[in-house]
Image 1: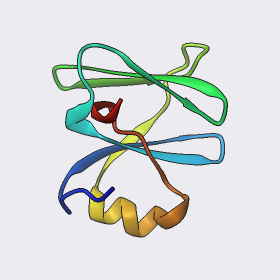
Image 2: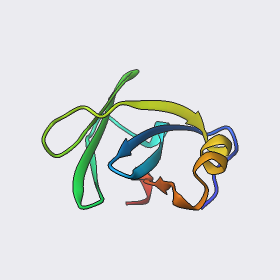
Image 3: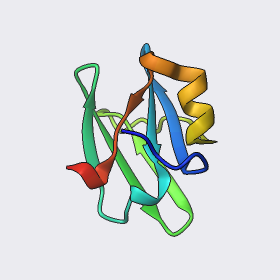
Length: 85
C-alpha cells in the first residue's frame, strides 16, 4: 500500500524489525499488533503517543514522512495501519 508522500508515520523498532504506523490512524482506543511474535500496543491521547511492548515497557519512536520511511526501510520495513484492521 502506498500513502501520500508527506503522511506522518510514527516509527519504532522492536528487535530486528522497524515498524511504521500512520500517526493519525492511532487513536485514543489502544490498538494492538504482533511484531516478531510479541504484542505491541499503541495509543494516542491528544498529542501524546505511547508505544508499549507486551511487558509494558515503553518503546522509543520518532516521526518520519512516508516517502522517507519507504526510502530508508524499503522492502524490510513493516507497516502497521490500524485503520486496515
